[in-house]
Image (cartoon, rainbow, N blue to C red; front, side, top):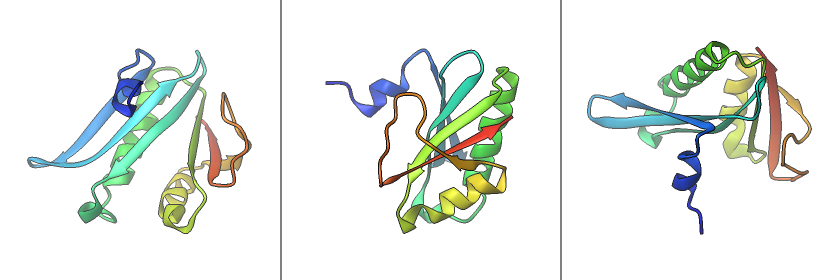
Length: 118
């Protein structure tokens, strides 16, 4: 059985961590779907650092790396429940818009799919 960590070790995945001194502040992962498309696979911020710009810094880094990789479009899947409103607001603030399922995803009432043309 493959763990989530095993999935992040795939050749198509780039993974970054953000630190505040010796404390892990957050992380982000990007998966190359194909030559022009990428997916933000995961973004997390330590609970005690929420609202302090860590998520914005990780997202800005992923966007810059995506552009440097020559990607034209980014996609992501996030949650639809109220706890994900801050994440969706962050993504919308840089131009992500809602869309339908992409790649191997299917419709899911607990998911919101978003895309951004770089």
